[in-house]
Image (cartoon, rainbow, N blue to C red; front, top):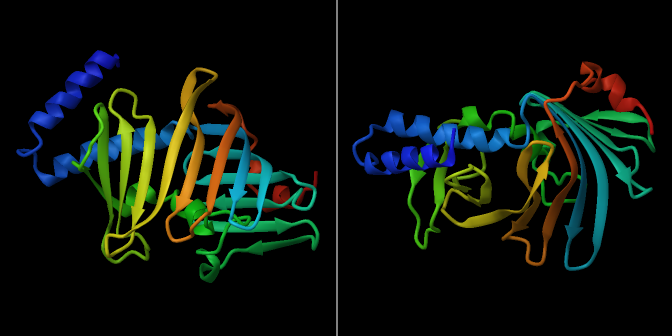
Length: 253
């Protein structure tokens, strides 16, 4: 679809905003979030990344490889520094396991540890698991905010009732003509901003353009941030299904 066509569609959505029923708005907004998510995943993907963790007292950078298959399988292996080399994480649907090479043990992450930090970063184990069900767990609607940027679409994501989700709502900002994410703000149930993710430095990997840098800033931890940089990324590639197995989780590098 051309950029001109997308612009026309977006203008039409705005003109009909106050007359669309809630189900129609939900469908349009959910499609925007789905397209944004597919920018990084597609049917399969492989990426080399760096994750820089910054706190007021220390700073370190991890290098890692990550594979994904569809929306429900993820495998991550740490390459450096030497102290963490070989640590791996496997996610299948809403279950998650970690392999610790020093003890040669595979540990399934229990529900009680889901809010724990992943590799000392500002990302939690829950972040890795909940991305699997994000599209099913939330209600989506186009929204307006103060000081809105031109050419940007804002989507409000509200958890469905009865689900064990800590966020009161999430606001996602994407570019109108490409659905590239700009930022994401997570609020608690009282409407307080808890963390913000900024997407920047758009680069082309193969035939796809994505923000190559994601900066996560927790607003309840002054001086903390986690920066993820995509060094290499490949999409829609052939991946051995054995990659996403407990046997592969135990393999050493």
